[in-house]
Amino acid sequence: MSLLIRRFVPTKTCNVVLKQNEPAIVVISRRKLSIVPSMYDGERDPAPKFFSSYVQKLLKRLTRPDFSKVFRKRTNSGVPVLKTPTYKFLTSDELELEFSKARLKADKLLQMPPVVKVHQKIDEVLSQDPALVGYDTAKYLFTDITFGVANEHRLIIERDPDGFLRSCDHDVRKRLNQVYFPLKGRSIKEPLMFSDSEKFNNLLDREKYEFVLDRACVQYEPDEPNYQRVTSITYQHIDMNKKYDLLRSTRHFGPLAFYLTWHQSMDSLMLELLQSGAVREAVLLAALRYAIHSDIANGDVAHALTEEIFPSPVQLSKPEQLSEADIDLDNKCIEFVQKYIVSNSSMKSQQELALQGFREYYQQLVELSRGLQKAHGKV
Image 1: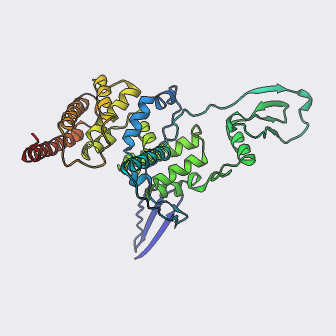
Image 2 (image 1 turned 90 degrees about the horizontal axis):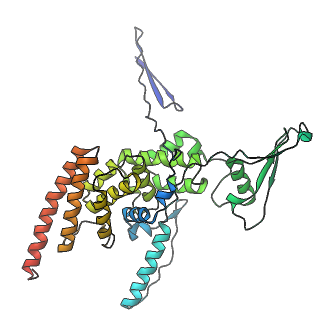
Image 3 (image 1 turned 120 degrees about the vertical axis):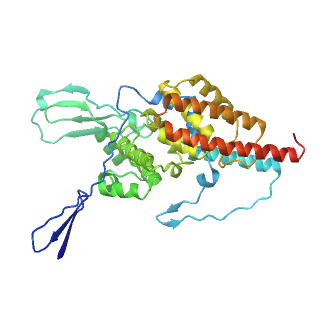
C-alpha cells in the first residue's frame, strides 16, 4: 500500500489518496470556517454613542487598567528595549504625585482607537471641459502640499481623460498623502499580513491579537473598510476562543466590548465576567448595552449602580476581606445580573450556573470577612 498526500495551501484542503490492489480513494477535506466581518456600515452611526462621556467611562472601567501590563517591557524586532532604572527616595506626598503621573501616562497609553462609520465614496464632479477630451490617456492628479494642513482636509483633485475634473476618492487621497507626508510605519502597499488570508489567519491562530490591532491602527484609518474588516474578524476570533484577557489593560479592549455590544453578541463576554467573579463589570457591560440599545429591563437601575461602581477601586483580583459597603454593592449587582439573565440573556443556563457558583463563593467570603472582623473586635 502506498500513501500519497497532496496539500493545497490556498484552499486549506488536504487530500489523502490510498492506493491498493483494488482502486479505492478516500478524500479527507479540511477547511477552516471563515469569519464574516460585520462593519459599521449601516444606517446608524456608532460615533455619537462611542464618544459619549458615559460610554467612555464604561469602556475605560471595563478595560480594567493594570499598571504591570500597561507599563510592561516592550520589544523591538525581538530585541528587548532596556532602560537604566532610576531610584528615588520619596516622601508620601512625592510618592502620591508620582502615582498621579503614572495614571496620566497610563490613560494616554490606553487611549482607545475611535469607532466610526465606514466612509462614503467621494464622487464630486467639480467641472467638465470638453476641449480636453482625448488630450491624453493618462489621469492627472493635483495635490496641495502646504505644510500644516490636516491630511483629511487637504485639497486633492484629478483630471480624467474624458475632461472631468473631480475630487479624488479616499484610496487615492491616502496614497498621495503617504507619498508627500509619510506616516511612520505605514506603507503605500497593503502589508501581506492583511492581504494574504493565510498569513492573517496564522497570526490569529497564534493569538497575536494586540500586534494585529496595533498594526491595523498604523496602516489604516478608522473609517476604512479594510480597517473594520481586520478588526471585526479579530474581535470575532477573540470572542470565539474566549481570549478576552489578552486584550485587557490594552487600548483595544474598549472597542472590543463596544463591538460585541453593538452587534448584540456580548453574552459570551458576560459569561466570562461571571465565571471570573467580576460581577461589577457584568453590571457595567449590561449598562453599556442599555446605553447603546436601550433594550434591557431595569436599565435605570444599571445606570444607578454604575454611579456607585465608578468611585470604587478597580478590582484586579478577588478581595480577601470585604467592607459592609462592598457587600451591599455586590449584593445589588448580583440581584441586577440575575434579573438581566432572566429577561435579556441568550445564554441563560450557562450564566445562571456561573452566577450561582459566584454567589456561593461570595457568601463564604462574606462569612470569613465578618468572622475576621469579629475576632479583631471591629463588629
